[in-house]
Image (cartoon, rainbow, N blue to C red; front, side, top):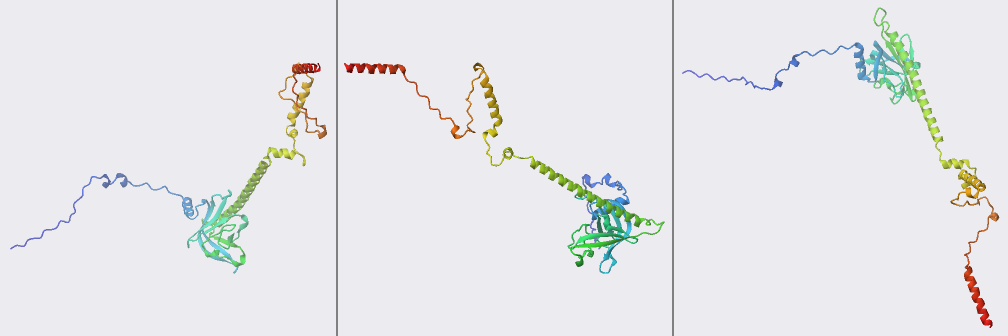
Length: 327
């Protein structure tokens, strides 16, 4: 008796048919996308710097390699502060007063803390044979001083108890350069000169900005003073023109109109009666400057007119009565 062979299970999954167009590959997906336009080294460097400092607008010069030193007042020697890398001399956006701003920025290769020091004045820059010396004033609490604060997260900014409220930090930039014909032969000279020029221009720009602000403030104060002096009430002006201790009379207030009325009265007196026009109101005498004994006596009210005929009849009647009694 032959044994029966087991049936083989069909493991093929059924194919699901679909009519959706999204399942079919698009022709545009199969096409090769165009490569982005190539960027220059300057554009690449600027994009990298803006990640750390968005206010940078342009790179004026750079050195491939530089080391940042700090002068120790204790040992009186230069010590590394742990920052070394590419040096960028950059221009930033204008400040709040419209002044130009520049900075010396070292992108650190050995850590996350970069060196960033604003260039504010030529007096804070000194060029020697070995270093480009930069001076920065930093507060003891870690807040920015006059020149800002460099590398705020680095231990170099520990307050110095001997320096009072502000710490004066002295930095030295050692810029790598080799003799010609190497490409870095002029790197130190070019960057040192650029740092000095930027610091000089920044100091002059800040000075002009402050002078412009002071001139605007003085102009505003002058205009406010002129506006305040021309704003006076009419009654106050009248009172100011009257001497002290004298009362203001109606003649003082309406003297001009009163003089015109007096002149009209004089002209009317010399006119003929038929040329005179009746005045709507009789002119009152001026009693203001008269003494009490010069004042005219009050005019008595007019007496009512008597009845003449009635008086005659009454008198005749009285006469007849007298004659009758006599007889």
